[in-house]
Image 1: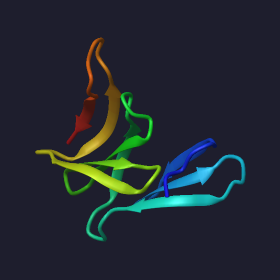
Image 2: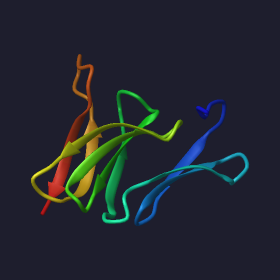
Image 3: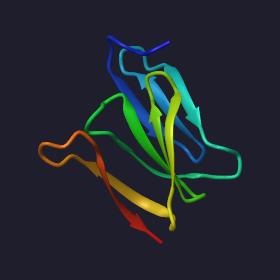
Length: 102
């Protein structure tokens, strides 16, 4: 079920992104990474506000539709991402991720 008609707060723990309803303060959705990895950072998409990029300790960036909990894409990186900022350049139809890595 896709979440609509309300405002939400996204919070990350070590292994999951949690979506809370601001109206009810209830947890309405989670996205969990594998038990072998940890979330290092996350950032909302500028192109599609339903999407969130989740970076993990396993050197992956996962694109998730937080309104459905569905994984959209996975990207393997060479280094571990510690911080991430997503931007959109003018006249572009895709996000650009800027990352701090180790």
